[in-house]
Length: 95
Image 1 (cartoon, rainbow, N blue to C red):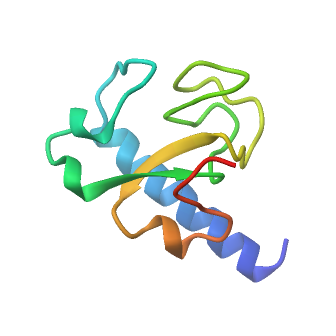
Image 2 (image 1 turned 60 degrees about the vertical axis):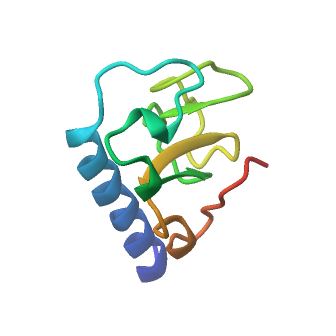
């Protein structure tokens, strides 16, 4: 694994762990960031999830923790606003 990929992977894991520590324990299938305390500070970032570490999505599964494909372009992770554009492969729209 090259240094760039390792750095991106490490950043993704760190952000995911930080959000996981503060995220609600249950979410509806179509959860929106507005369900969180300060909705304007979060955005859906597609294509950066790990297997089983997504927040929600469309496609082959219905919701959180059901992604069977890492970096699934249809699965998203909630991130602080502006963070998605800094992660390689992250996009604000599903592909």
